[in-house]
Amino acid sequence: MSHPTHFQSKPDAEQFCRDKGFECPCCSFTTKEKFSFTFHMENHISHAVEHEGYFISKCNKLCRTTAHFHCLYCSQTVIRKDQYIQHVSKCSKAEALSSPSPPPSPSVDACPTPPPPPPSTFVTESPVSTPFSSDPDSFASPPKIQRKRETVTCFHCGMSLNKKNVKLHILRRHTPRKMDITSQNHLKSQCVDYTNGVYAVAKSFSAPSTPIHVIKKTWGLEQRTTCELDACRINTEFAERSNIRSYECHHLRSLAYCPPAERDIPLLTEQALQTIVDDHWIGEDKKDRCLAWQREAIDAGVPLSCLVNICGPSHKKYISVLEPTISFYSRLGRVMVTYDTKTISWLCPCAKPKQPCLHKYVAKWHLFEVDRELFRKTTSEERKCN
Image (cartoon, rainbow, N blue to C red; front, side, top):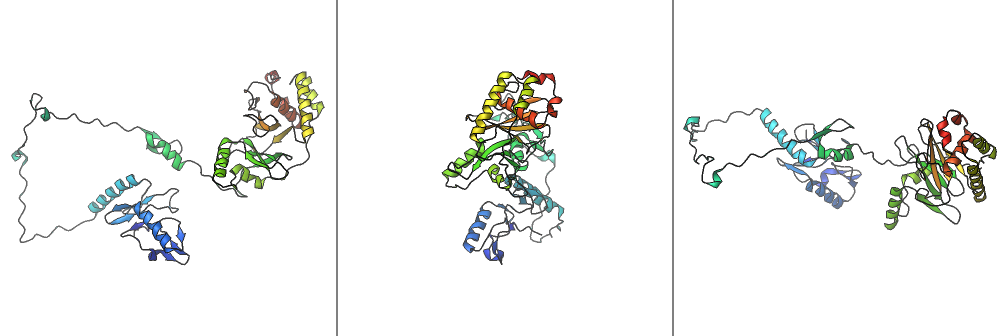
């Protein structure tokens, strides 16, 4: 039985008229306009494969995740057009060989075909060329050297592929598709600054994921909506140039499912900071800078630091720290400091991994305030970062 994408002639629109209108047999396209459907089918036929009087169009149904061709003779599907032409030609020959055909009946008027002469009676018309022949055209051309194709194995599915086709294969078969943001499928988010509308959002759906900062402030005089990732900002600027003002990246759209924000700003105590100084985790001069920074945050009505609990793994702690100076590592007025409890290491975008900075001191102060057990398990090497 032939597939709906196989046509013996150019299809008529009336054959595909249903209750809801005209339904395309090759894809999910439906319309109530006959002219629009006819134009759509002509586009399918223009890209179809012609074989043995058939037009084989590409199928975009849910048979496979990508568009493909269905073979006329077997149940196999092929994605690329050139590969399908080779496949269907081999399949047609195999079909012809497998189907028995009766021998032709002898005709009275037909002359019998003489048997071919034995090999010894064949005579070569052209003289045999020798290396010592004076005719330059008589020399035989050297045989072409066929290079062996380099094949590699896809580390995703184990399929053996030509080396030059690996990137295209991974892009088509193993690149994750962007999913729509719904109540069951969205990025986790958390409000870190209620006054300025700053949120921490998971960077991606795949785990492990790190949190990033976004701003969505739709109240007050200074309203602002932006994401700190370069790719999201480029897409937003392109959408604005295209007069698509309602565009938002998937990080901003996920804020529709963010839990309610806490308006109360928890204050870090000076007593906890003094304990850190007495234990030689940070120096006395760093204590004064941390306290001065906290007073600036209180005057501005924003939290100095906030523990982010939306991303894993469990051995990593993320602290959002205030940074009023806008720079390449603090585009939205905050930085994300990471503490790894396994390697006992701090990471801040403003400094090298083992280089101290004021953001790391504030993050230490915050973690010591909320979870002092983390500091009891650390080694003496950590105290050198002060």
